[in-house]
Amino acid sequence: MTKIKSISKKQSSVNNKLKKVYKEIAEERGHYCTGCGRRHGDVMLSHSHLIPRSRRPDLVTDKNNITYHCLDGIDSNGISRKGCHTIWESTKRYSLLDYHRNMLYILQVDSEYYNLIKEE
Image (tube, rainbow, N blue to C red; front, side, top):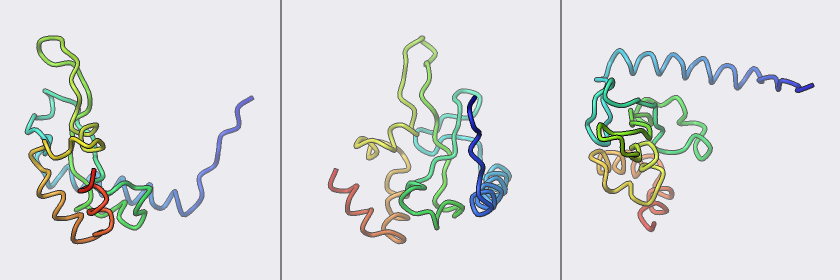
């Protein structure tokens, strides 16, 4: 029998706040990938944290730390393509349209992380 791990009150609070932030983002922003410009409907979008949640838990619900990035998928020719969410997490992040804007935010809030990913 598999035991379901319970969520702490603190984590539950973060999850609820994050749901609220995601809803606000959906109401305030266009539904397109900021990394490539593709629109929702053409690609699946995901909320993408610029600075990983594991690195900066204090920024998990900061709207400035979250953007829409597309997920991996199949293009119109049936060819598999990497999504911007995957690319942002790789050393190829510099190829994304939102690279400089994202890096400016990261520099402002976490210069150590900025320097780490600039060296990649």
